[in-house]
Image 1: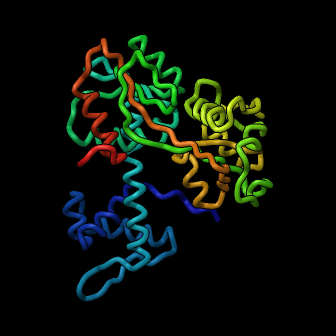
Image 2 (image 1 turned 90 degrees about the vertical axis):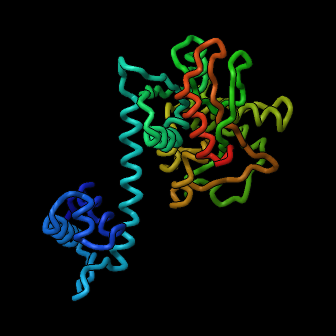
Length: 306
């Protein structure tokens, strides 16, 4: 029988019990009755078929399983807050706001944390976020559509001011049943000759790959893609289904590699590092909120002290 999905509200209660040490303390912090918290916790135990609490004359404490689930719930709630902040940033607001554009990799994997931290500093400015490939981000900054853009291409435009805020690496990945999954490495020539499942031209991922291959072997170019897909998620899904070879951001595939859904394949004598770069028009107004966002991005990546 399929279990009903877990709601976030009782998870917040569980995390509060874990953090504050008792049902009554959690109830006080959340502004609800102790009976209400106790009823929600019993409902979770029934729903999951697990014992979450050890009840004794000294009070109620979490079981080891309860502690583990509370830690998981804390991570989930943090991600939920990041999700809400990211969705809010996509709203258009006629009030004071700063227009931000980010490559798809940055928007999906880095922006949620940056936006959550930006919101936590109490800045009243609304960040309006647009996601596009790196080439479109650069053009939008040039045209004045965006106050700042974040890209992951080696071709940083010289007519815009720029700053490295983080770093990334591209990884060659295949599905677990692909012949390359059994190999320790492939050569640059083999990689270049293989039609990849790829992003479109103009994406930072594809541009970085093409540039690094040309630098590794003079005159070498990559084969035409087996397929061009618009997102890393679409590419990952196809590769996991045994659909071929892809080169994707480490940010996008780390969880799949750790879970054994994708296999990383080393390339002999070649790696694909790339910077995450902020760009803005030097002729435009540099908002204080943009400076704060850049500082948050750099601190999150450890590229600046603090």
